[in-house]
Length: 211
Image 1: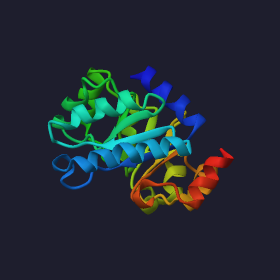
Image 2 (image 1 turned 45 degrees about the vertical axis):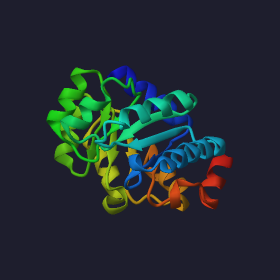
Image 3 (image 1 turned 60 degrees about the horizontal axis):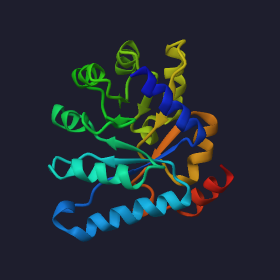
C-alpha cells in the first residue's frame, strides 16, 4: 500500500485535483447514459483533467464499466469513490486500481483493504479517526466534508502528528476556491457536485490554464 500511496502523491503533486463523477439514476438501464459518461470523461481529459473518480455502484455491470473506462482512457488516473462496505471493497479487488476512497473511516474495511494491498483512502471528520488512520499507515487522508469542517480543522490535524501527511479536501469544494484552498490548507482537492454536470466552468478553466 505504501507504494500506491507514494505513486498517488506524486501524481497529485503534478495536478492536485480529482473530479468525481457519480452514476446517474437508472444508469445501467439506459444505454445513452453510458455513452454520455464516456463523452464526459473524454471532455474532461481534453480540458486537461488527469485524475477522475467514478462512484461505486452495486450493479454487477459496474465492474465492466470501470474496466472499459480504464482501457479507453489510459492517460487518466482512474479511481473509485464510496468504498464503505465489504461488498464495495470486494468488487474492486480485481480491477487493479491505483486508488479508491471512502467517505468515512471504517477500520474493518481499511484493514481488509490493506491486506489485499488496495488503497482505500479514509474519509476523516474527527481527531480520533485521524489518529487511527495514521496508525494503520495512511499517509494520504481525505478530509470530508471539507466545506463544513473548515481550514482550521486541517491545521489542527497537522499539529497532531509529526509525520508528513498529504491532505485531500472533499465535500462542497467550489471551483472558484481551488487556488485559495491549495495555497492555504490542502495538498489536493476533490470536486464533483459543486461543478455543474462535472464540466469545467470559467474558474476551473482558468486554474487549469495556470497549472
